[in-house]
Image (cartoon, rainbow over all chains, first blue to last red; front, top):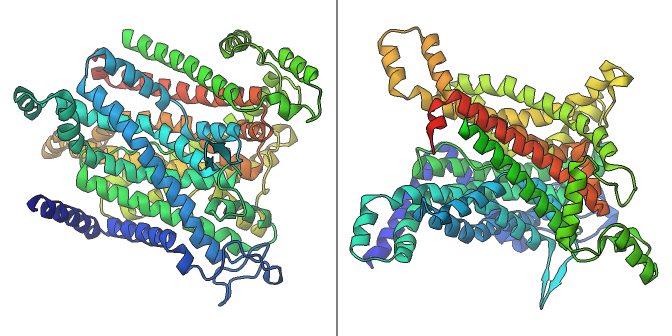
Length: 304
Length: 313
């Protein structure tokens, strides 16, 4: 009971510290707005995002279509709201997929520092980290093809492929930050004391060291989510992500590309703003979290 | 000395492993490349023959060995789609990418370092606020969107620069450079933001050290104190800078796509769309090599700048 209340207070305190910095507050607002848009898309969007209306094609912004309509008369505002879904899905789920791997590798290597296990794990991490993530993601998705792949009873859509590939590529970065914390915790006095109490290695790693890695991982996770949003939009933009006619900000920009010579500015402006505001929000939130949770570290993850 | 060798050797090993992974990736995919290249109703024997011609019937390891030996001998093979020599294609596209990405990075360093330093010297001032807004916007706004906006409003709207394409130097210096302005600006501003963020953070860290306080207390002129701090702030910036240089080649992808610059990334994207697997292998390998070499350069520069690192391990 007391523990529960403690946790609640801690989270409230964190929220309070974020909101008390101006940039952190702005980031929190932007991210919440985008998350609400994604979750409540069916209720907020005034039109069906894939509804074709040839009579009203390429309409500039008006009262009935706040952000205008596209080539086939679809409402840009509705597509924008639905487009928040793939962006945030990829951004968040890729991090969640990368987390277990990152924790496992980082904790093991950090805990057994100086052993052959650490040497092997961290060399592998270094090698994967030596690859430009974006290029690999593009090559993998491109080679696998953008068509949905059947896997037993499930259909693996392109979005799932991107989530898995990005998640896997996040592991080395996450492993490194977990390693850094775990390695310094593993040699600390309280761990030595716990060991003398007869606590096993696994318990030490999971219930003593892991919680202490959380704050660093929260910061990284937020910034990596921003990277994932950018990656989804970018891949969709070059035709390797979400496939039309589904709405995604990258797909919308890719459609808008055909109109850069004819002046339909609303097609270009709004999806780009949506991506930018989401990523700015996540980056501001990540920076604020870092200032609060991890003040000594000042370098961010590599996102591209 | 040993440390230098160790890092260089590590880069070479990384390069081999990555080339192997990329090779496996392009060979493990479902569906033979033959199904992409040949007609759907090609008789079975011809498909098998085509696969034999391209060594596809051998185990992946053997194929990799053949490919590696050929590549090390400078024979990159040919495209399965156009049947053109890959070495020739690369000799055309690499210089283009290296030129415009290099210029972008130069712009990023020339603008980003001073911006970060000024920002750190007067934290909280209006200059700092503006610099931070530029930095957070620069790292967050997708560069292909910036590129599209520049094309729509500056190239098409105002008609100042060409909307895309690459103009070789042989068509005159003016047209050559004017076609480069928008792509260089797009990529350059992005990395300006990245570098200024790191420079600011690193410089602030250096300025908070005790030796700076001591130097100030001894009455040294501010510029001399700043110079001391800068000297200590630079190594991490060099490190991040070299890494960013490697990344900028990966980042160039979307910009080459928007502007239709026939560089390395556009070659990769086209190869992916055509499933031209030898081309995919080679372009990914080249981009990764640039990245690894940039990282190696960063490591070696850091070793040279920071004597403490040389004794570690």
